[in-house]
Length: 196
Image (cartoon, rainbow, N blue to C red; front, side):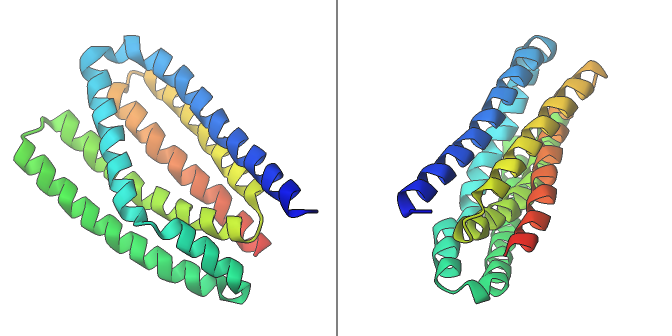
């Protein structure tokens, strides 16, 4: 397959996986807004936004570096992956320490504190999944990324609806988000190991 076709195919697959996830999240937000109300919605948004900021720090620009280095020397895949994962987990731990400090000085209530800490743990899962993303891209296995995104979106949708209906409110959404990250990682690791 030509380079242009491979790039187009990979772009379509990755876009589909990401778009599917965003569409599922829209349904979750539509359901949660009236259940959680403005205060609960605000806590959820705060936790998700803070985790997104922490993920930028934990990623530390390693995504392109991992992809480039693995594509150069595929024999080094696991060594590069392990090194990048160690860096990301160390940065994640640093982010978690910063988050704890932020929580202490901000005077958040128990719900806000718990939501932030749980989403902080989700950063470790997502940083690991992003390392897998890089390896999969280097090995031209974007389809595995797509399946990880789709599985994650389905898990988030199903768990969020289930836990909202069960009355878990904000924490149901927070745990659904973190669980969906674990699902994504759980799908991608075996596919990455099988295809590299």
